[in-house]
Image (cartoon, rainbow, N blue to C red):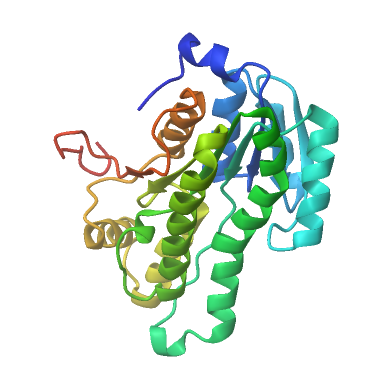
Length: 271
């Protein structure tokens, strides 16, 4: 899905897009893609220093706002600062996230609380901040960056998987509620992507087993049924397509991005 064309510009030109977790990986790619399509972008991050390189790569107006997305008060302040700088938020991309793995019997309540706070309650809080204005104007897009883990099970990530399932349920229910009022709510569900989270998983396997990084990555992808890793830009393309779609297009979607073509084929790793 690639909509980096002039066809996207009329829909997004001058629109204010707020992207959480925008300082690296998928969030940075989404911010760059939306900016290239004409949107004015707010980078919502925890560490503003890490957002400098992303900000410098944007094609148009931007602002950087700071908050831990799991802190409701801080998030409220950051959303207000973004609106003051660039106007009302038209597009919200709930991308901030983290993953923790542990056997289920070693997954305590605190681990579940952290995953639910990050992947469900943070999008809930952010959506509640921007939705009143979107509904008033009769226009808005909310895109939640979920995961294929939100559509299927996986061992050793029970808390993360449960939280991503919750995010998709939230997406589908909210879409039905606010879609008739001009706000489109959808989710994208990437498979393993070229992010720090995957790099960290590979490093842990290498440390535990002594295998090479290449073998560790092959093992992770094979267990997930992937033949190659997804790029952050592919995820950004899907987000851009959703945000450029006219209001009235399908909502409540959970778009899978696993690197496969329509016929199910995909190039081998490294191809």
